[in-house]
Image 1 (cartoon, one colour):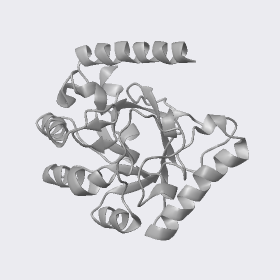
Image 2 (cartoon, one colour; image 1 turned 90 degrees about the vertical axis):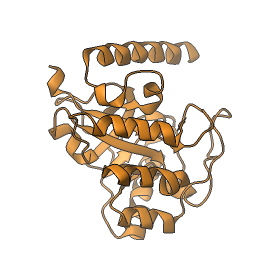
Image 3 (cartoon, helix red, strand yellow; image 1 turned 90 degrees about the horizontal axis):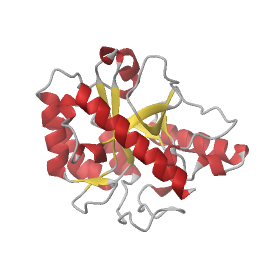
Image 4 (cartoon, one colour; image 1 turned 120 degrees about the vertical axis):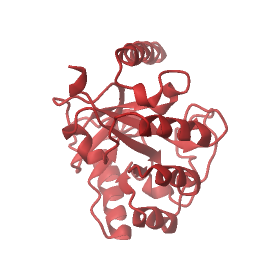
Length: 240
């Protein structure tokens, strides 16, 4: 049933480059304004699975433009959000091993900025230490990437880090993440029977020319996301 679905939106960088990981501040404001003018509740990530018909907002990688741009827009609407940090790159930029050359090089928040946005009420989740594809790592190394990221966030912020996002959406094989909830990149809505350690998300990239955020649960939107998901899966299969 449509009303049993909820959704997690994925953002990365808020900038004007037009890259696949970027949306502009104006586009973000349009998304949030659309949600605000709908009847859709925007909830913390941990609540989205128990609140059918709701939306949660997530920001991967911890770009500095979250603190300088996105947070200001979110606060205007009073919306919660979760930021997933690459702990080993805080205060640096997003040139981790394996980064695509099509992605712009952008600064990431340092720990002082992370503490500031956490104090403003934003939830801080883990995104590994070095942003690797966890499926390509030996189990012990994949486990360390997750555990050490979690430990550093907890040590620096003095609060539990219970939420996680898999880099590239790749869940490690034969390793249980040490978190209460984890997000992948499968393009779909969240349903009550989904694995809480591999929840699907909808990338905000698909809202650029697709449906408005406030109509995300309409039948037309469901067909659109299903078609985009099939096309993305086909491209991934062809590239392997």
